Length: 151
Image (cartoon, rainbow, N blue to C red; front, top):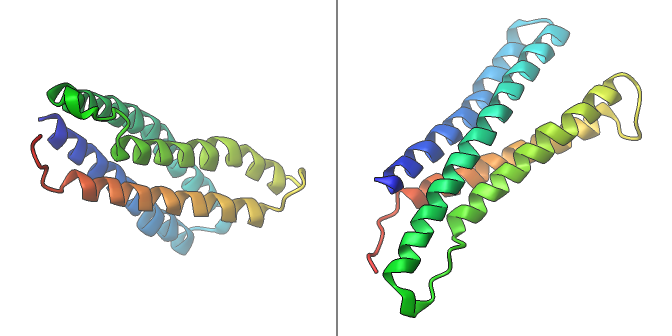
């Protein structure tokens, strides 16, 4: 049951990232004036970042429980409680924290003409982290749907 919940949450998180990056943000810039579209996209990314924190926490707890259960079933095998799924969730969480919570304030400062980096450079780094998060979530969702070999 927990494995199915983890697969559902990973898939929903991936869907959120794909929808925002491939549909919502481009659509805002296609139909709105540039500064308004930027504000709309910024609000969407703020909501996504907050949801990402919650989804990461839930997935970490679930995958930790699943890893502990696997380790308890085979104590002689010395199964690690640090799973690939936990590392993927931590990677996506890192991308969220760095890409939004660290770079967003720097982007605002660059837009105001402050800081050492240009807006374009910071936006590019933030976009790369967002894309990396999508890849990590794709792998996480893919692994969550793989058949499990019982221990």
